[in-house]
Length: 258
Image (cartoon, rainbow, N blue to C red; front, side):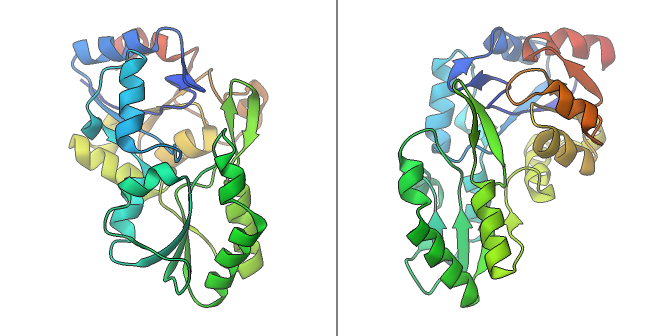
């Protein structure tokens, strides 16, 4: 039986609307004995909220099976003074971090949201404050560096653009705490007690999901939902081990290829 890492946005749902057959596919993977871990770069809701929303959409999972970037940040920045630009809902997952308005040891950027809260978080004045902290010696971290994500309204700009802007202005390089960082995949495999070469990553993002997983030695399946674009796949130097129509087809595909 395989160990499987499942992305959320674009694989199980888009803007909260379940991908057809996704809950049934997850149930079937469990029934066939596969070990699952849900891995996400979502930075708009707490882990408990994300897990509860998935259960409401018919996907059965325990909170402990869901790995978030906020949890990675809590481990990486424990005990530090942090100036954070992120959605308020994530604060409960940042246990052990001291959030400050100045005198920070680290600047941490979260992700954008589909709501007006994004406009309040990533204002010019907040980004200028973050820049000032970097100039004073703070290190730059981000929960992810995604350029955009797929919503029911179409593609939306993500916070990777703001991360890149701060990198450019302060002449620094951000440490990415979520996918595609090796530390994030390492934590996921440790939770499953799995070997990279015997683990599948299932995602819709060629760079973050597929490329990041391949660099860590995982096998990969790209789904044709969410962020998937045929032209991007044709141009990309990242070649997934398989491309399937959606997660609904994953259990039977694995049966024939595992």
